[in-house]
Length: 619
Image (cartoon, rainbow, N blue to C red):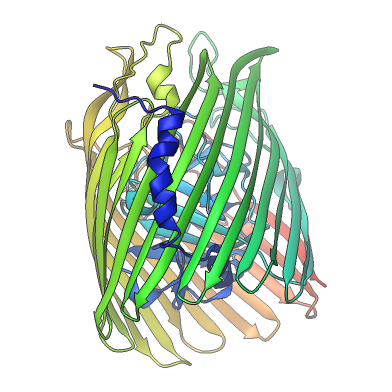
């Protein structure tokens, strides 16, 4: 029988947890300090506290701001495509809906967090996040945490977590401006200031392009323009207390194609999609020797509106209000406890749905270092929901350092994805609401190794991992039943390999390869839009001190899709950057240099050969 938990009872449920949470606290500000640390040193997302990479049992990859700048990414989706274990499906370029999958899990099973704030769209059918409008202008680092992570992050973290940290403490002012193919203009700037006691950073960026036809069979160009801004600021209130504030805003307009009669195949239409999203959060942290903590309150909202032929075809509004207290207490040098409590309220207005839901959760994680080089962790989480059954998940992990150059790691975890309000209540066009949906539940494990060869001047680092994961009660739309039901089981397994090679001061290379065998366990059919083979190789050469040249080779294997599968493709990108001075850099790139024809999503076109160039200024 479905459980009901009122808002009042929720606070009663959370009260003792918040009280005990004062004894189990961690410093969110310390997490921000970790943003400038090399990925081999500290990782924040794996335990929601700064932890050394050699002590983490989870599989994690890090993309730094330096990588984003050097590879001339425009949007976050571009950076994620080059990461191991991640596949990106985008409905054409320039504003086309872009979703990310980790290890074959759906986009709704991937949790997206920016500066500790969950930004998944509550009004989307499966609650996924659209990366199409997320500029990289203010991003300091991206951590990709693979495997079930519900212990620390709750619902929607079956496949993993993509945690994004924006730039923080800096006194620099920067700006960039670029242009190129398809009438594209892209620019932005950051104003920042910092002192010993406070910092502030404001970033504004925008893009405008004539685009290409979203429909592969079409010829009419579909334009796109967007503007976004973000603010991050903080101050030390005393030697113990610090405070931070985060704010984001985005406004995007995309011309889209549709499925007109009489053939109802993707073709040129006059459709448009307007998206407006914003978020604000405040965090109060305290730091006292081995006893630290952070209390966060956040609110985010997204509004979407589609039109075609002068008529509104879709409108969606989703919002999330959440609060949490998370902390860590170092009992001894070799024992620490992390724990916390969360409360969240979501609401949506979309296609006849006007609903809200609440959930509360508490979790605890014990970390032990019983011997030099050995780190063990274990924990559990319990979630209570207002509109369906509760969920309890657990996770264990271990990391063992064999000297300075070898790390062996492994983890086992459970995950769940709560049914969205859309899935629970959608009743348009003859669909039948199903309030008795159960959460999707997952079990998964991985085991990996990191090995470093060479010395400081010339070295090779290789990371490899094997993973296996099963999901039951997967929620799918059943046309026979005209609604959403728990009807499927899925299984994914595979291997991920990452390598970084530095030959000398002027030559370096990196590569990753993912083998992902993801299928519907009921039918044996491969999951949609998940290539079995994918990878990226990047070679960088610095022939003279001021000039940097690089080449990217992207390989994407054949994918199952509807109405037709997507063929395998290989794409080559070329880049160059010249530092005129310490304050001015000129750069340019050629994307899809071989003019390869491919489809990322069935029926949607992708740009051919294109070129872009620009300048970056640092004051």
